[in-house]
Image (cartoon, one colour):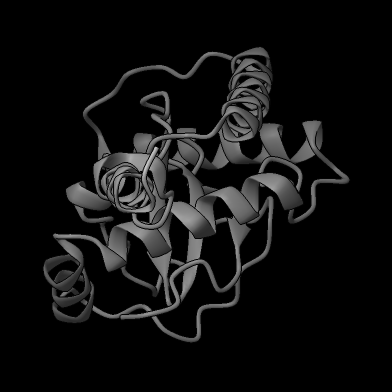
Length: 186
């Protein structure tokens, strides 16, 4: 093969997808990391279900009471919960790569603008297995960013708090886990 042809094939390979830069497709190792993360999420959701069923209600005061009771049961079931239980170091690195690739991608400018224009959530003390601070707004995560993160069951949500990615339990109003410094460029 000629040198020109080899160079052309190499350039084509990089343009078509041989380069991982900016790609959000998981590498074989990433697939195992995501599988482990999803197993940890499932285990957490199973623990919440075992903590006791929650009753459906339209009453705001009863809803708040039910959330408080569920939070207490989950906290009691996870007394040693700490940062990194679900977002293991490998998972945190994966999420940081996914977020960085998304912010560097085609929709990156729109995502950063969305994060800047939303009600900013800064200086919120994050602690695993505690209630989300009532005085802090729950900033939504831009949908274009969510598309590049593993799907969550409806009981959990990703939230951006400052530069951290938070795994939030909607029903119990708890911080399940978080990754400090996950969002590096807003």
